[in-house]
Length: 70
Image 1 (cartoon, rainbow, N blue to C red):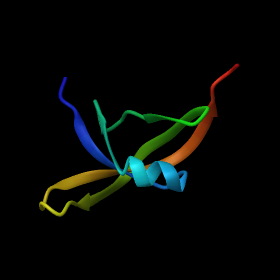
Image 2 (image 1 turned 180 degrees about the horizontal axis):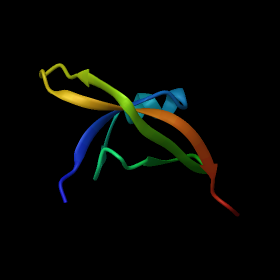
Image 3 (image 1 turned 135 degrees about the vertical axis):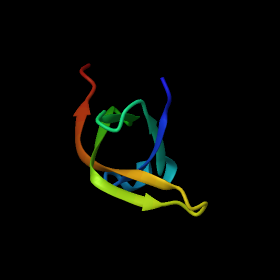
Image 4 (image 1 turned 30 degrees about the vertical axis):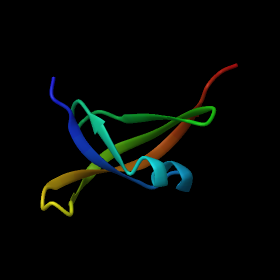
């Protein structure tokens, strides 16, 4: 399975500063990023961006958070 590079948008500032780019297996996947005591979730809503290298990359927008049960 090939990985698709995506740009993350929204969510906690500290997370985006460290993880601006992420990889997913499919554009329809939810990007689930471990952060703090839970997971931040990002989905693709149709937006794309152009990287500094000229490539087109999907933008995944923050859609929620889940906490790890103790």
